[in-house]
Image: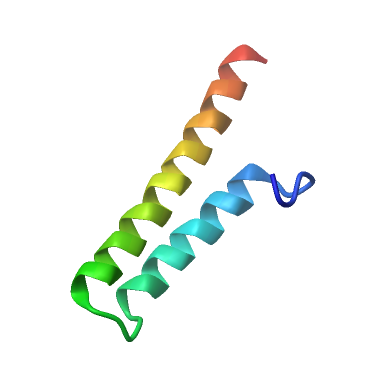
Length: 57
């Protein structure tokens, strides 16, 4: 992990922001969609890990 002290929910929010930015970048539609999907999937995984930690605590 690049920033081990960063809050996972903050990282998820950052990935959602990067996903929105990817939609408006100056790239082809397929590249924008690929980048968007990558960041949304990353955000969903982070949020799922947060939810999983909450259940175990």
